[in-house]
Image 1: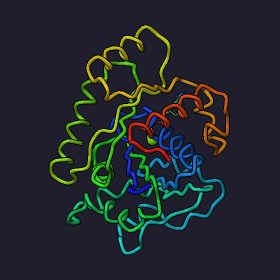
Image 2: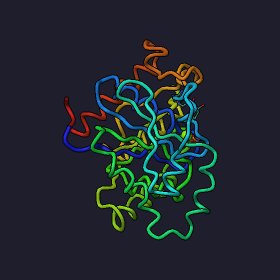
Image 3: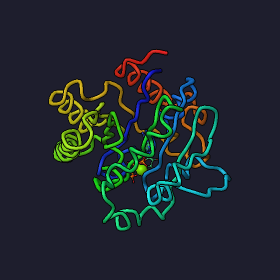
Length: 255
Ligand SMILES: Nc1ncnc2c1ncn2[C@@H]1O[C@H](COP(=O)(O)OP(=O)(O)OP(=O)(O)O)[C@@H](O)[C@H]1O
Ligand SMILES: [Mg+2]
């Protein structure tokens, strides 16, 4: 692959599947032979917890953001899959970087030094549109927005789309919405209605594939496994495999 795809998984709404999708997509791409770096940008550190077994972690994304001469700490997870982890310490970063000049570009500069080693860099954002998500979208060439079709999500979508547009105009002309992914989908009349409404209003922006609600998806990280190794026949594995194929097609990647 020529150019590294740098993708942020972002939505200020919590619990919509950002972390699950980052981990699942990363694992599937790595199994397909792509070189993947996952970056945990959430102080909850769910992504790190779901991937790390008993590895000793010495430095995290926090250290790299606070002191850029440290460089991005990278830990191997499995073949083709690396992680830059987070810990709760990351919760301090907004305060500590409040007066740093050009603080929204720090992650982008850190990625510039390592991106040649990867086909994909996937960033798991926290549930906010504060400094870490700002850094992620400023570094990204695409943003995937996971949403749950429970209540009409349009107001929230307008907010994050405005945020991405603002970054596109002022900081990073490559930043744009790659697509909206419906997650934790349940076969209820309400879900169906909301999905229909979204497809009508947003068209191609919504990925065709949706991720059904599936208990294996919630269980896999507790075993530090990805969904496809944990339960290859589950709806969750099938949906994420289909989603990765759709994503590769949308990005015009066929290796
Ligand atoms: N398709 C699914 N089916 C069942 N459970 C799911 C599914 N997707 C995610 N979950 C579960 O829902 C919860 C929230 O998912 P996840 O942590 O990925 O969301 P998030 O957007 O990263 O949340 P946060 O905003 O708190 O970081 C987790 O417990 C996860 O295991
Ligand atoms: Mg998360």
